[in-house]
Image 1 (spheres, rainbow, N blue to C red):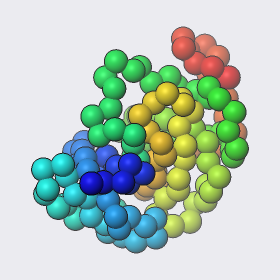
Image 2: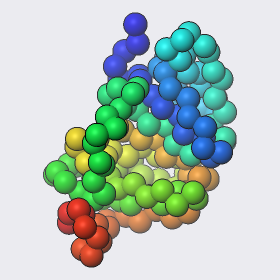
Image 3: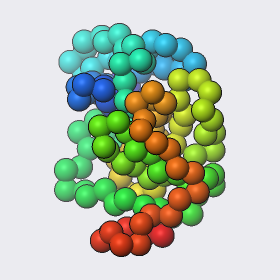
Image 4: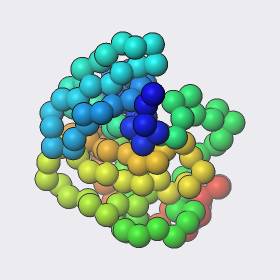
Length: 142
């Protein structure tokens, strides 16, 4: 049985998703493995990834519309990440650095399925620290 804190969804740059659990992910290693629910073992090359989403549930909640912005107080710096594919996520980070493969962030929406995200630097278009969500967009909070 997978430990709940090791449930992941790997988002590849080409749009492919791999869901399962991992026991050997380290942010300093270039490869790790995901064991899917069907028992298939996938070797993952970090350079092919956009991000690794650590999740509560592998199926998520399609009824939940993830809010963009900052909806609870949390330690760390607020940040916005824009990926090369145009996806934008908001959250908090305790460990942002431009060194290494990437960095961890925690979601701005406490009700989303993600518990944390490891963002791969080379898959981002830009990262903005200490940003507030845009006031003009419906559903955004400051």
